[in-house]
Image (cartoon, rainbow, N blue to C red; front, side, top):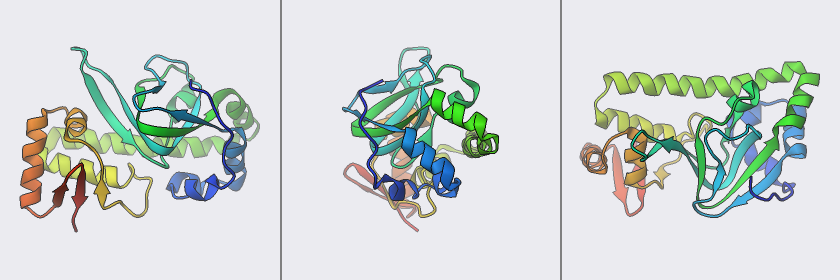
Length: 223
């Protein structure tokens, strides 16, 4: 784990832009901020690796994180791309098992990390608050089920359109979706499990349909 810094006092308002944190009881919000430490990451630096110790609940506060792993051929597979102010790590927090994926910074990134042991100790003394962690995990599970269903029944263009909408919504964490997404086609290809050429072709098709507009380094969602 990289070195840590104190949590800025003004962070609470920004964190409240995430639906999960905003709906948490004030006492849980207070504990997350009191226990949390800020971890700066350079581009390409790892926050944690697959199989690593479950060391806490996390939230991106600046930059971005690629969540993924290597496939059977040693090529990177992209599971998700996390931006401010998305929370993650709740599964390992709940079951105490090792991390399931790698987390690598995109550009200069800062991550709020709430250490597992003191957080679990507090949750065990306030057992009703475990429901809030379950609520966060259930949100992710619903997204995972939707993605699996799309993979089974939809053509690439429709799957890509839905994935872009999902990214714009912060995987369900934002009430107001973003209009522009800064994500390279190579990353999208790894996320969709197809070639870059296939993603480029699908994006061009969606642009022709008026679903989106392609800019240099950005995808603008229309409508």
